Image 1 (cartoon, rainbow, N blue to C red):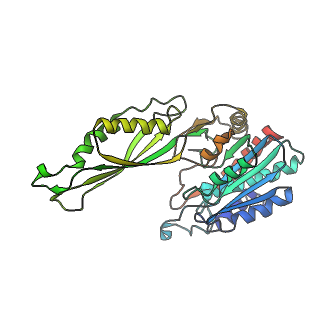
Image 2 (cartoon, rainbow, N blue to C red; image 1 turned 60 degrees about the vertical axis):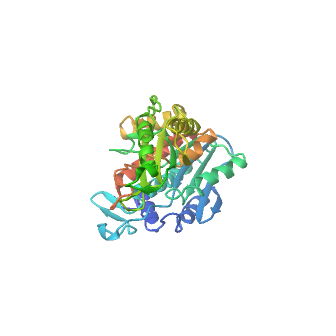
Image 3 (cartoon, rainbow, N blue to C red; image 1 turned 180 degrees about the horizontal axis):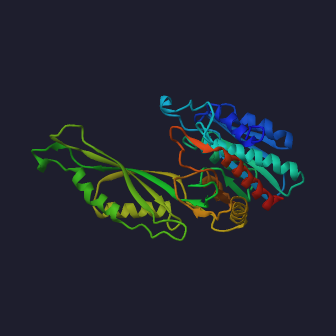
Length: 379
């Protein structure tokens, strides 16, 4: 298949060739604007700090269908370990190689080509179509989709459906639809003691010894039992640090970092309260700093999931699995608007790895799925 026959592949190659390591967009968004403005899309650019964001919309009415994605990529890592340069897109053995091929320039290319075909066939389609693109998904994610959604909400713009192009598939394109994500709540806990000489423990108060029973309780606590869509909330210690490096000094404090991945069965406030009660029960002198990366969201039913499922069955011949597994995504910023949100993209086996790649035939298949969903909902 030539690039002339495979427009999604051609556009994906153009995007990959731009070294858009977060938060640099490297010209990806202007390229996409040039493609879609002639079709009647109006562009609004939102720049916050070093982050470029783009809102492209065709139409003014409801319902509003949004494709959400990001043009930034993670750093390539050691480039000498790549078989071909990470920002020189390369077709080899039926795969397209390059940083962002799967996460998620392939999906962005599939969005755009699907929209181009849909608008050509349906110039007077129902409602509106929009693309929300950011260069801050792989970074702190504070000046990207989060800020744009806040700005759009202030203008009274309300999405009905949102499809995030994150690489959701496991073995075959379309085999998994992410219909939600767990929340992520992190903390840095400092437990205080009294520094002293190890030979005179009666004059010291070892905070590591004091912390151990409390940490054991935190690890062994059942926070909830999950539900149909979510596994039980998990607690994981991610770092533990104490002492000054000398083996004859009792440390004066111990610092523990931990993270909850939590379901819709609980909340960040409820988890914080339970942790505080547990620490107080152990009579610890402590400080704690919390960081909420994202709240859980779930689209458990609706016409977006129905449309995606039907199109995948018709075009790919498989029944997709609904999943909430994995980390967080920008869907967490869009779901609170009330929109139905799903993630649907290519196979995720090589994302963030050296020699990231995607099957070339999957790009056109994915674009066809996106077009089919638009036909179902706005055609």
